[in-house]
Image (cartoon, rainbow, N blue to C red):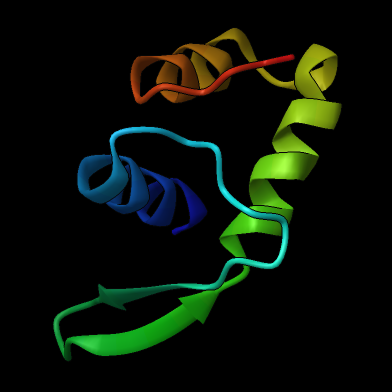
Length: 69
């Protein structure tokens, strides 16, 4: 779900320089439930844990514009 929020942010803004306190609203599931995700915190955590992420996750995030430093 957080990846979906990151992708949505990237498609709208054209970058992943997400402010730390940013909350992204996404619609999920068949019932079209709206959720709020703390995307800024999640992006920051992904950056700080980059060495522990799987190569697939690093590639996924890199494709949508993640800057790792």
